[in-house]
Length: 261
Ligand SMILES: [Fe+2]
Image (cartoon, rainbow, N blue to C red; front, top):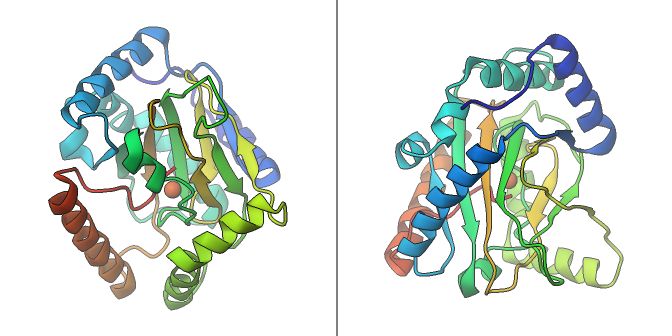
């Protein structure tokens, strides 16, 4: 079943305004209970193949047998994401393709993949919680520093900015800053059944750590790369793919999310 919502311009406007004001927007009860059950069963099956360790599936080919395919191929969902992109970028996206990711944080490796602050390459990010731990301190909540930057006119500036932020050294400082209360991200407790939206390109984000014994799974839908086709974008893709291959060889795992949420 596709996502449950009535697509119209008013909805796009409401969600876009909420993202601009609060850093995120929520579409309540858009994932039906039977859909959620089916998504969880499929995710569980995949999680077992990875022996309780972190995995991420990127792209349509990896996820075509999951229910997520009925979401990313839904013209209403494309139109919603396209409308949000238009609102934020003041122009149409170069492509109406939605790039899906399923990310499952569990086990000890999952801890290493947490607190991994980054900007997405795509402007609009939709997030569907599949499994969210409800117990304990470490539930893997989504942390956001909302709308920190604009869409960069120069792709090179975007690349330099990402390189300065998305490295081990800076991430350690961000974590230290949060521990000492110098930096206070907005902490969003995700509730399964809802769909969440934010400007992934403009918002520095990461998930909080999860206890190794719990499972946190989210489906992500990336839409609209403001720098589509640029040399820098192609280079970043090649670097990410290289990293993914190395991680796969090391862990016997699927490629890691280059855009974790
Ligand atoms: Fe992300």
